[in-house]
Image 1 (tube, rainbow, N blue to C red):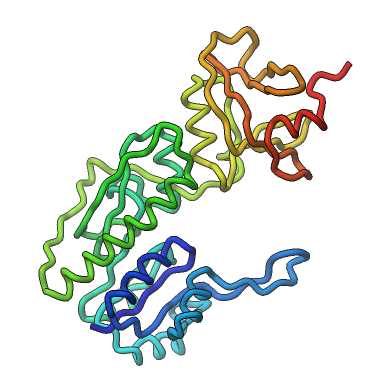
Image 2: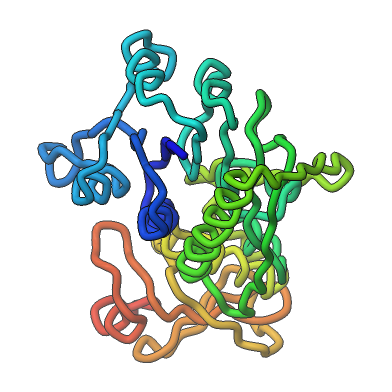
Length: 305
C-alpha cells in the first residue's frame, strides 16, 4: 500500500517512524515550506517533519498553495492509495479526495470534543480529566469527518500542555498504525460524530494567554499549565509582560485582593486569586531569560523601599 504522509510539527514524527518500521511504503511526505527565522530572521528553518523525512531519504513536497497545478500533478504522480494527516493544514477536496482509500486525519482529542487548532491546550485549560486521540476520514468541514478509532488517556492533575503533548504523540502513532492496518485489511467501520457533544478548541492568541486573577485558584492554575511551555500564560508586573511557565497551588485564604502579590523578595512570590494563591516557580520577565523564582527575586525587588 502506497502512503503519502502529511504533517509539519514534531508530533507527527513518531507515527511516521512507526509506519516506516512496520514496512509501509511512504512514497511522499507533504509538509510546510521553509521559513526565515532565528536571530534577525536570517536563518532558513525547516519543519520537524521535513528534517526527519530528509534524514530517512523520503520524497518531500512543500507546496505553498495546495491547489497549485504543479503540486497536484506531483501528488498524483505518487499514486498513493492512502493519505495520512497529522497537524498539517486544511486540505482542499482535490487533495483529500485523491487517493482511492481516502485521507485519514489524526486529531489530538476525543472528537467531537475539542475540534480546532489547540485541543491539548484547551482540554487542560478547561480542567478536563480525560482526553485522547481520534483517527477519522476527512471531509469538507474541519474535524467533522466520520470517526474510525479513538483511544483515551488521563490528564495528570498537575500535567502541563507540553507534558501531555509528549504522551499524546506516541498514542497518536499507535492509533495511526492501527488505522492503517485496518484499512489495509479492508476492515473499516466509520461512525458519525455526535453533534450534541461538540466543543471547540480554537487557535490561541496572545490575549487568550493573559491570566485573570479574579477567578478561583484551580481555574487560574489550569490556565497556566494549559499554556505551558507555549504559548505561555502571562500577567503584568510593573507594566511589563511577566510569563509564568510553572506554578503550584497554595490552599490558603487570601489576605490580599485577586492579582495582588505576597512575597518575601527572596524565596516565594504568590499571586492571589479569589480563594487561594498561585505560587510562581518558573517565570520570565519581558526582555529577560526564563528562570526559577529564587533567581528572579535575587535580581528583582517586587516591593521597593
